[in-house]
Length: 630
Image (tube, rainbow, N blue to C red; front, side):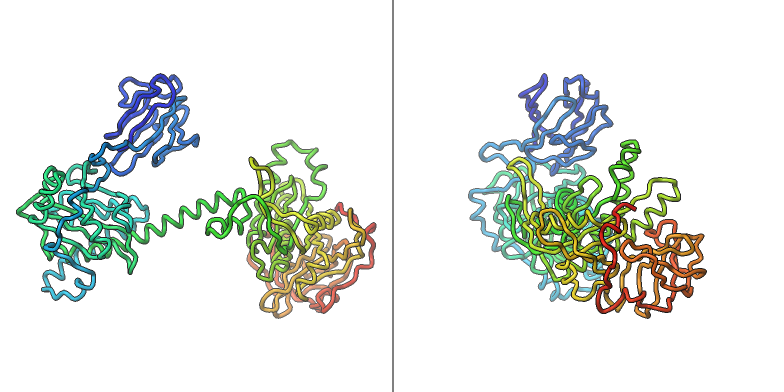
């Protein structure tokens, strides 16, 4: 049984046993009076159904807290601390005196362990399959199974499944007076999850035979012990006398070879003992109940893991959170060496733009921006290391590198620039500030792990490869994706790029070889592109070359893309005439396109003047002629 211990306030030290539902509040009429001016008159409800204790906020002014987390409804456990106003109460399981049965659940002990159950009837699932029965008996069994299926098929909440199973058993067996459902494979560690007494809801002082539970779980056989068995048990343990048990059935809950727990129902009516036919029916019904329970347990486990994973993803990169949940990675301080591709993006001119806007508008704008960028990273399996003001740092290849880290990172960068084009079109339509983004990528050796102090740390990646990424990103102009030679080499010929002049960066003796990547060959001979263009004085973008060498272009609704030649608007390759496109079709608009339209076109030169070729084009401009600001 649970009890509530006042830790603070005027009743500090008082212990209140939980024997039923309680109303907690400052009103003297409350069954759990909390003399606290900060508590509401009827602050919260404590509900007890014999197996679980819930606390439910009663619309209080200051809220109800469990372990300093505000709650609406919460299932309480041992050692939880509930706060009503400024008064704190600890939840604890009531200690038992020797020989006393818990009101939640207890085993008979002592001589009971030597009880002979040899006269009891046992049955396995195979016995049920092989039993020859009359059509009437089979029809009754089928009807019971259908009733169980209908009752449980749409229930997904675990606690409702527990209660639904017992409720259905009480319908199938009208002589049943008490029932319980236990989870566990070990008879000494069973957990009571549902108990019921006909006409009384939750039952108290339910004593169970350790021998029976052990026999059922170890043998995996259903057991019927009748009036004579009960009398023998009564001679050995007075709890059976007080409970007036005359007949009971105990059935293991199994799915395949997996034991989930057991069901037991009993009756005090000596004139209506359970029979072998009842046991057969109980086995058949329990098979359906076990499947429903198994599915609900799996769903509950998935929900718990999903919640844990989502919580971890708030503090850890996605792939790392998955590894922690699966138990394949710990969060101890320290690091390991990995080969990784690092991405750093940055909003160009952010500081100047932020100075001209109210702080709340800056925050709202950046949140909208991040909402568009983060899915691009996650879609390609990237892990976000951190947000640095307007910048994003992400990585690939940690903890596992399947050989596609560089390609996934480059495809992400191109997608981010395309996504920003759609975002910017909406900003322009609303008269809001326009954003321009530079991106840098590098591939190399890093140290990844928990870095910091014993009191505060974060998972991050460190090393010269990270520093180099930051250096080349700082040279990227709006719309550019700059990559190092190491990343370009890892693309293994899939990159569509322009070789830039060697770049001198801070703390590097030798210049860094840099490419401006504009496309990436992917499956089915298609190429993902990000190519800003001028079409009759309006900005358009080629975003893909299809397998038939036609192109997808996004453009303003007011732009007739077939009316004039397309000219490149690239810092490193400006004013290149790609010819007048032939319009093939207007395609459905996608969310990422913003206010722009999407068209399917064909160009006379499907190599885009050699940009899509066996080797990168070479930029003839120097860095001074390629300013970072738009």
